[in-house]
Amino acid sequence: MSTIKFHQGLKVYQQSFETAQLIYELSKSFSKEELYSPTDQIRRSSRSVTANISEAWGKRKYEKSFIAKLTDSEGEARETQTWLQFAFACHYMNEEQYNNLHNKYNQIIGMLVNMMSQSEKWCSFSSVNKEDNNL
Image (cartoon, rainbow, N blue to C red; front, side):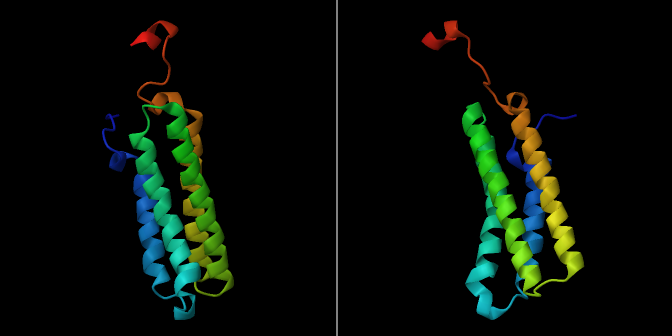
């Protein structure tokens, strides 16, 4: 397994980016009356999942900050699932589209939860010895 050097190499980043793009394309067909909600909201929350993963990667030197940004990403993924549910209820997508996207976000959430639960493996400096505090 190769070392991941950039956030774009993370599977969760790639999957969240791809899924946000699917939502963008699908949302082009949403009612024009709903341009700001749910169209704008679902686009923003789905993109925010990916953006927060990028931020988390940049903050992995600080484990608590890393986890906090991944938590934000998880929250945005769950918000996206809620907007998907509204879009489905408003008949902006069919059941197959809804289930596909909802399941993709369940996978993304699972990957984020795993990263948070194993944060020490991802962080550059997960612990500091008391003797090192003088550095």
